[in-house]
Length: 247
Image (cartoon, rainbow, N blue to C red):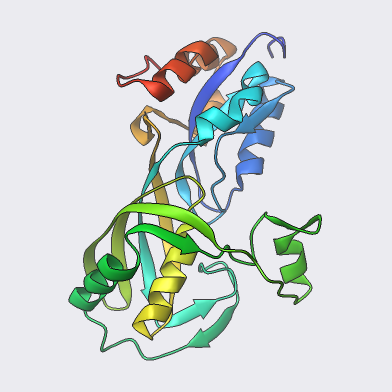
């Protein structure tokens, strides 16, 4: 174990599926005895990929490190709608999808879901309504009005279609719900859609190929953890300027 006050900085982790972002923070906190561990941008349990962890005093810098554009690769499933807008949710509607072509999907995405759009957050989210998390209200079967929020979809590119599954690349602003983007596209197409898988490739200038896995961390020594942790001053500088951090 190391002194919990010894390490401060940014650790890039490849989050596995079915782990929450909180699970990853709790694992690192227990594994290395670090009192304060947070993150700069949540990933849903279904999603994998780059999670920017903040260790020690770096937890105070979540805002500048999370206020950045992000890139994802994923797949949506046509013909089904869920309450959470992803495959971890309860199916609430189904519809024929066989007539939907890749060309039609690309045209709709370009017309309605690229550029600055207004997105209504899903009920299954951590946002609050009168002090209560929306997902807690959703578990009670409640639906409350949510105000639409402006987000920017820089790119929403569809790579290929395999039956009802369609692979995509997305480059979006902070606060964009990819699962809601999939749901809303499905509604616009008239066939429903839900997010089937998602992998975060980049957050700001931090890249997935700079990250470590949970299995790596299980075997890391304190010295290896320190070696893979980017000092906060360097991380903040790197967030604003091009170049690769030496992780």
